[in-house]
Image (spheres, rainbow, N blue to C red):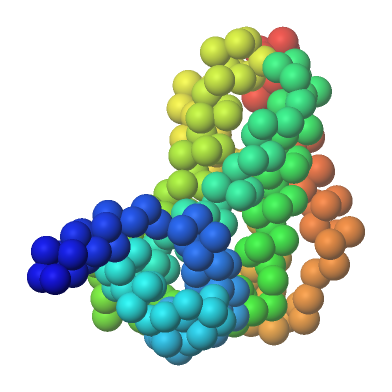
Length: 216
């Protein structure tokens, strides 16, 4: 009897994770974290939203910090799928940059994200280790994807840039402008998707003219 119970427990321990549960947990985490913020969201909230047990969430991610980090990485990875479209030409590069920029700016300029951004800095000042992890998972990943795309374009002779990371900063600044500051200070209440798309396309065209490898 004891041997059968032992074997049963071993089989349970070796059971592979359920991808559907993982997807549900991450979906719930992204929705709640980005709506309420890190501090106001609990593991219990996420488990309830994902229709899984709290134990399941802890077993897969260990703690709230790791889950928050993974939620950010998943969000950025979804944005980065934009780099898989288009061909390897200059027009293909413009298409990919626009697709990524539009996804990114729609996320950054969302009212809930702007509201959370106002208070996040205080939280991360008090929890610097978490702040660094969040930076690496979010902004750091965005910078990585964008820098890599620009470096590849430079290697193919489409662009000319000595420092792809600095070029990524230039492009990001052209996309973002002063809009996030206007939103944070209430000088602008919201920004329509159509305006976001226009800003991104204008920023990309300006960037490509400045870094054009055929006119250098």
